[in-house]
Length: 274
Image 1: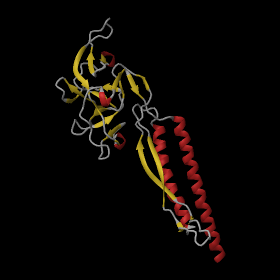
Image 2: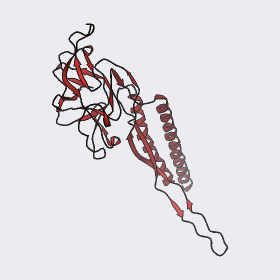
Image 3: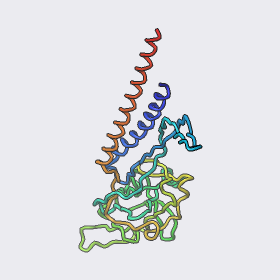
Image 4: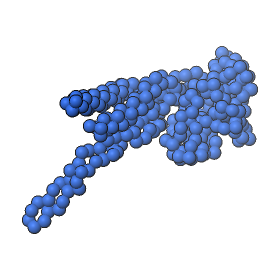
């Protein structure tokens, strides 16, 4: 009975962790750039009582005697499939391809990477993604924060397909006269993006598994192309995630029932001894 209770306990712990991931996915289903966390399981602690015997002298052998296996959490992975694209402001960008925007939480001492292109301009005139400064390429090709922008009004800006950010003092003029701001959006990519780890907001940090980010570059090639005026939404599919959550809850309930049954049997045996 103790083995039964131990297997059920391991399963409950694994399913509880998976339910946390599923709950986080559902909570972030409307967050631009959020990437779903997937969970997988594995069998562990196999218990084989007999390996079986071969047939000899015309007599049949015996099959192995085994009592099955327990289970545990195998791994969690980031699902980097693209989310749906919706219309945003003139300042927003989406990426069609495997690239990431580059942001920094500490003024460029370290970098994070995101697919959230719902950009804003803060009070300092800096382009931000979820509060983090967005980095671009200046006319010399240096990686720099996109800052000192002349207006906080997103309608005054537009992105060209090559990643150039342009500005107009009066978008109501027909046709509006745009000038280059001197910035171009910087994109990067990873050899193993599934190895990234979640960081601040909807951004990701590189790990040994992901490898280092490729050199920053403009749109095109390995990073993909940009879609001005669009925002990539979360890739969480609510119905599928809800069904997965229900299945995890059923599994938890079933294993709790196993523990209760084993506990009742042990209690009954002890009472009989007394």
